[in-house]
Image: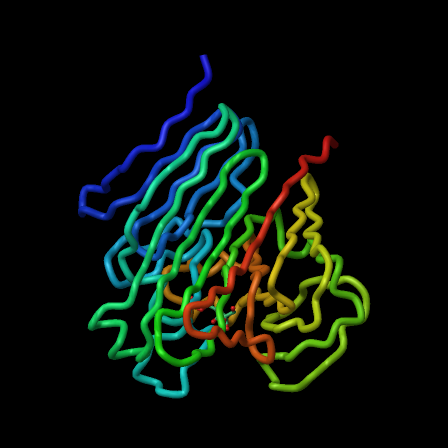
Length: 288
Ligand code: TA6
């Protein structure tokens, strides 16, 4: 008999998450941030990196998985406002789940404006995240403007991938793309595949095709829609020491490839209109 289960689970401190199990995969999504923090295909290793010293506490973003950066990506010019926006630390509503077949489950979460969000970002909105879990992972982040005037957002599905060893992975698909180097604030052009031997924090621009993460035992393909920017991040040795909820050697086994609308890919959403950022992530196990 096939197992398809969507249940609401609770940690001992009251932190709630949705557990999804079907014949293709298991996934866990926290109500805080609609944060997918675990996705593992049947008989495979977890796709997403998750810090083993991560917080599961209200108001602190989980370190790993797929934090939702919204309605701004990165720092806000008002330094009293949180980096990467408030969506990842807000409590979302679990709206519904659907199991069209034994291999597939989808779950929908919603966040709408409140007195608290209006203080940080003075716009009325409806934000919906649909996550479809089967052999692949699909995230659709839909922003609807409920305001009288237009608003501008930057955003990212800040995906942390688990990798065997950072020195052995490469990223393909960004060759010749312009990027903003967030470490030097200079514009550069990518030359060939990306390899890692120091800190990397870049916003790739004009991205219109698949991005492929090549690891020893698997290949991960990321396909984005309604997005032309991709953020690539690894904090390397020194920055990791300053990161919250990360062990000193954590940089070795993680890498972020973020499906985004960041920097010059900001999106203007007109009143009563929507924009949906979509990412489909496929992983293929390579037999050695
Ligand atoms: O996406 C890359 C980045 O903006 C980095 O600059 C880095 O600091 C990271 O996100 C993590 O940010 P966080 O606020 O989660 O510590």
